[in-house]
Amino acid sequence: MKQGIAMLLAVLFQVPAVWAQGAKTQVLWLGQSAFRIATPGGKVIVTDPWLLKNPLTPAKYKDLEALGKVDVLLVTHGHGDHIADAPALAKKNGIPLWGPGDLNMALTTLGVLPPAQLPRFNKSGRISPVPGVKVTATHAEHSSVYVWRNPATDKDETHPGGEPFGYLIELENGFRIWHMGDTGLFGDMRLVAEYYRPDLVLIPIGGHFTMDPVDAAYALRELIRPKFAIPMHYGANPLGKGTPEELIKALGDAAVKVLPLKPGEQAEF
Image 1 (tube, rainbow, N blue to C red):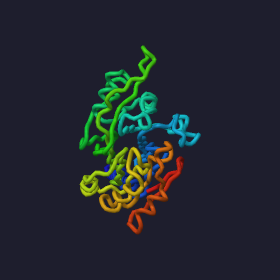
Image 2 (cartoon, helix red, strand yellow):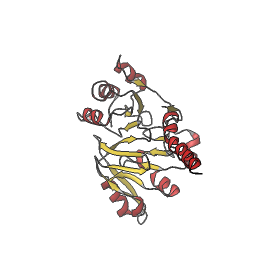
Image 3 (tube, one colour):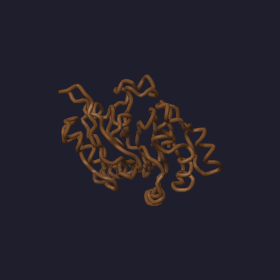
Image 4 (cartoon, rainbow, N blue to C red):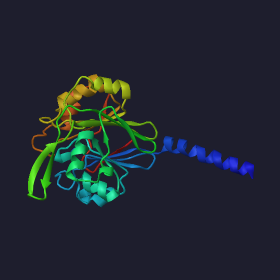
């Protein structure tokens, strides 16, 4: 009997090693900065869900049900093209909306979600929203406000949105994804890369509000040097003119593999 129990425990303790070696990370781009990340441990992470009114969202994902069960919801800042559908997703899944601390304080004050669904943290803060997954808030060179429709007046109001974030997401098997949020170039990209060593960078390339392809190529080639990069935040707004082709050209022979996904396509790692 004891021998049987010992064998069973041995098998159980081997399971994490099996999925860590064999299970894949799936990164699905949904347009702008919205991604659905399926982790090796079977969790689903959604970032910056602007889906219902995003012109690039695939028709299937105009229905939030298509995302399936969401375990972790991350919002980088308060602009509508990043947070628009986040409150609805939080309510639907009964999960917290993780975002910049002062943004979540504004959402709490406005009654967008119950306080329990609006936890606060700040840059360099690290959370473990589900077992095996770690999320660290990183700097982003951008701005943030939250536009709220006041039901009493039926008019829009602009409220402070805290400081914008990026997110360093470490999955159960150690694979690290840096969702940079909306950002321009800043020198400490090198520090973030050297300290956290991201394998995959989700990087804005549209220009005007963020880095353009030339800026993004410099960041990837000189400052971050990841294995993989997926360009984002372009094409949904006429001002976001940058393209993956321009990014690849600007990178030259840099040892970064760019994965130019179309909305609705996914990469596996």
